[in-house]
Image (cartoon, rainbow, N blue to C red; front, top):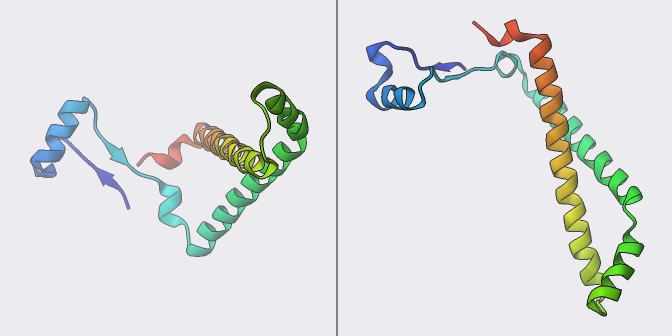
Length: 121
């Protein structure tokens, strides 16, 4: 589906005011989503989930949790490991989500630079 706000009078007063306020012609369009079938959407979602899982796993192997835990105990005192790992895992997951979003954004940006005519009509 393509939504466009043109300079015509039939665009509606709210959209016309919004276009004037933003100073540009708003266009929400994506040819990729128009031709995606449900199976393609599911495969895309699974690939994104897989990349998130891989990034989280790599972070779990790379980040030295025991050293950070002992540093935390030395600086702030005794803490139960259960409470530590709850916060630690949450922070690692949030970092993994941010890295995954950056990865997806980078790949989409590269794709759009290589195929600019597919997004224009």
